[in-house]
Image (cartoon, rainbow, N blue to C red; front, top):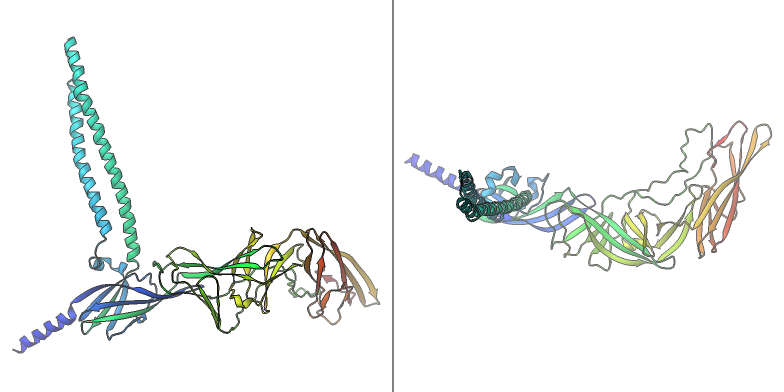
Length: 526
């Protein structure tokens, strides 16, 4: 009696926990967040489970490298064992999700045409054999005229029909073979689609002590997703405001289509920036100062810093909502936006006009080019992020620039490219050395800058140059004839701002004196 009771208990335990139960369900994305690099999906799915071990086959989950079992949050008490990709063990789960109806239909059609061709090939063989028999029996010895005419009639009535039948059968076989090729290509595409679909399936293994419905929420970190700001900036001339289209280039490779769900774009790291040539402080070197690194002739690198800002929102013409939080900008896309997988798409965020001031800027010491700069006051209210911008001037694309938002002032400068109609030239016109006793000497350097405005309108130009700075007590430098420049002794910068009339030429003359020991020679004087 005791043995029977033990056996009954073992059977009950096996029935409860020994059998394996399979459930197929579909995951739904509740929210997607895409960062400058990477992202996060919030999934939801539910499943009916039975007592014992359960395999929950979850469709449309997306590519899921690097997930952890702890990411699955059930609302009921169960034991989470593990999860794996469907493709890790497809033979175990294929029957549970069912075969593709499309592939089955295509296979049936291929089999039908193959059987048809096999039968027609048999008929073609018989026809060719008949032609061979007829051709072998055409030889007559000393035929009469009547026999020759009879043979000709036979060829026309019989052999000709056999030839036509051969041609018709060959045409049917070729046509069916073409159909088979088309269907095989269709089957290949369907099988590839099935492989892609299967790569978005995962299998979750759990144990449950009772039959119940369980709801799961999953936060899935995705690696292959990114977005970047992109702008189209249009100007109709220096008397018009800038028209700015704010866009986002977005890509995600989850294998899923994001549709009818909340999608948020969140900025990540800031990128470096190309901008017009700018001057750094210039230290006077002698032949003994090889250890000094002068940056005066290099493009500066942008200062990649972020700043804390209070939370606020700006609504553009589109239905995307842009808000800034501390250290991050968050953009909520319109729910009607669809983001396919493995394709970069461009979405409109907002469109607006920005009050703009224009000026020309040149540093002829570095290069004889003049840039047109657009200045936007209080630019932070537009929620700019670092990104590339295509520039259009009077409906003509003139190039691409980078938007620099890492500016500590309330004014943002956007380079609209160089204007070849404003010419600059800088020359070192005089170098003169005088002895000041037995130990010292004085060197005088004089420069001339020429600016020619070939435009038919007046322009405002900011011109920048510099005077070297001394690194030693026994070397003294003083500016001579700054020609009404704004001179900053701490940096050595000279800045001129003036208006130049159409076809006007201006000349600026300035210089500096260097007092130094006789045994020293200056370097880098340009």
